[in-house]
Length: 241
Image (cartoon, rainbow, N blue to C red; front, side):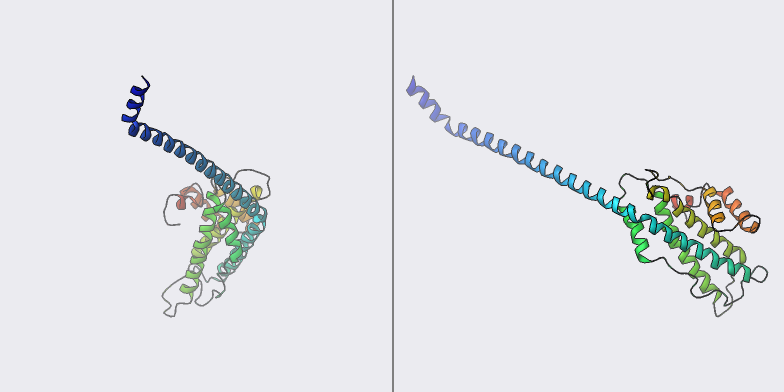
């Protein structure tokens, strides 16, 4: 009987060996997979923790960046108001706009806003994104205004209504930054999803552009309000601002 078993085992030895090798390989794969999964889970938790700490750090300095944006918007609106007052009839006289009309934000302010957008995994940052985009659009428009006003051919006109429209753009930037302050100061844990024209009206008031003193400006704002739900809606729709 024993000799028969040994003979049988000898005949099946290659298959038994292959089976044992396969089982050993499967065990190795299992433990390798488990260790890899653990390593990936650990790395994922570390990355989540790192991003949360970065978000907290950026949030801590956000009020300073927002204050810079408010100052930028108000300074721009005041400079534009001077140009409105300099208009003769409906046109700004040639070579009136100062060369330094477009004064960009400090680079560290824009970087703080960009970092906040990048590391805000659980917060809707649409308003912040739109505000940053609007700052860039506003800067480009101001540079275009300067170029048109200083055109040597004298064929490009800068109209009073166009300058007023840029004041409303500046107020939209002001309103966008103001909407983030409560979150930056930890008074709220979420940001607003949209920016309304009411917020722009309040921004004009904060910059002392009151409706009784600037009726034309507020009439223009009312016209924009009738055309869209908020100042950044065209950006959301992928249309020109």
